[in-house]
Length: 193
Picture (tube, rainbow, N blue to C red):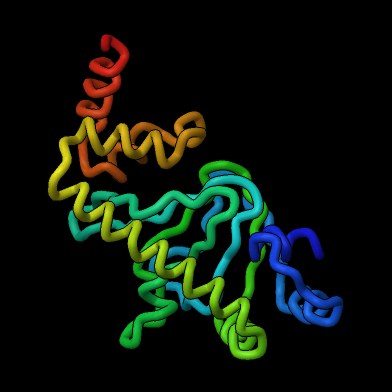
């Protein structure tokens, strides 16, 4: 369990007491493909670290259309952040589905907040992660507003170089905001270049 903590916190150095304390806060979870970590309407109290596998966060609109918000792979953290951090909602607005068998480590937000209060280095780490995620979401919004579908796809495969073999085409198309037909056309164009 010590090695997972150093993996989670990018090789930070902890005392033996800190390691034992943190180990008591973590719960290991195994998910199989098609299992749900969260579904819309569920109470959200936890944050999850992905040790292995791949998960997809998506939202279903009022017409029943799925919109992929995020893929989470090894080394990423995930949850329904609207419910977890939002002031007006505590129930999930999205689904988090396992799309490749996964091993996760769960920690409650309350316990994570305590760790941040008691260990400033974890707080700094968490702030840096949130800053990176915030910047990535802004970049994605700008890309959706300004780039062609082909450019968005090229950025996607650069950001997720090993994900395509684990993800269905309609998941990728949904993430990019295009149809599966457009995705196929873009791939054919790239292959012919």
